[in-house]
Image (tube, rainbow over the protein chains, first blue to last red):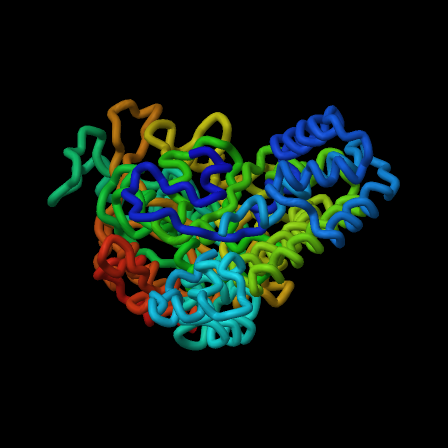
Length: 113
Length: 487
């Protein structure tokens, strides 16, 4: 079976499964941190924000929160994000892409109450 | 992650009362937080913190030894295809005097070959114990005083798939949890920064495949992390272990931001235990990157140690297995396969030559592992198992004298155990004079499993998991602990 599905508790098709078991493992998180698919989605999200109407960084952070969490960022959250974006980035992955990834893998987006 | 077991239905009256309490907007009262406060609430939170980082899962209820364990970890060296017992640890001189004679009694399959086919290998007594070992295993012979040879193993079916499944899961058919998954379910992982159950296989293809190390109906956290060891470069061994672009420092800053956001989210959800576990798992993953890059890197071993194990992929896998055990991995399986042959020990033809060749490689690494564990003081609480899914027939499978081979044989075969609370320098059980049937103190696969769990401090009758309406065990309704081999 696909490794990713296995990682996230997809039941073995050879077995009847009354329900999907729910686990939390570090290897699931490694996927979210490092897998090319996730990084690609983060880039795409950042590109979408960059191409958006509002030009100021603050406005884009607000937009990012609206897109990812369906709400406005709290004042704290906004300043954390601004602080983060202002830090120098040495890697080819820019801070916007990193922020986009953070939003995509955040508990708020990943886990529906 | 699941706290299903502790979630009882909340009292509807209380729920209504709580939701309508003035000054508390209904929107912030989630169903989850309600259930928590009403039924499990503080009690569970307290228990969780007492039990430590693993306490969130319902399955964790089973995680404790039933009695004092002798072994803390296991490494299973699995020789795919089934090594011949009468050419390794079970000398049968009677085969020579009866050479060519057809075997008698009930056989699984009619013998169509040349009849009894004695081993061409010489057996000599070794060590203080004087256990007889074939000349094809000089290295294992040199550590035989550390080992327990079981000469009376037997299993139910002489076909690879069912026999592999039985050895790995106790059942002839798939879907059952594997040995390692049961162990992890029973004891948990001993290291938060590495997976608890690791499968090392030299080639991607293995007969039966992932069902051999699956967690079956146990939660997925107990499944093995499977690693193909043909390329020992660390990035290739462990999936997603390194970010392709972000240096660790920058990723740390990224995770600090994530942690802040997740903490805020957690506050807004009344400290939900599942969300808390997610935050912790992310931190574990970050640390795992550093830990795994070090643990999985056998190039850090001194030259002398690497030489002791040998150059083959199996040998390197054994060395990697030892590193992982040292770091707290609970259960390691090393398979003996290659790209050319996914069950090399299955010597139906050219048995003599192929068996010798296989031993050259398998012997040195296995003995090096035992010696290495001993020298590090780890052998006493590490159980090493060496064996395959069955043995091979004492009679020839075919008629061609130049290519004589041995067929699958399930009614008697040998396995080697070392360390982990097992007596060293002993032989347990015996097969009949031709090596056909286990006659003295027979040890079924279920008995081996029961013994293995016992050594780890687990009672095989009490280690159960409820699935499909009943409690399942690794040993089903069978299994007797082999008391005679316990140190």
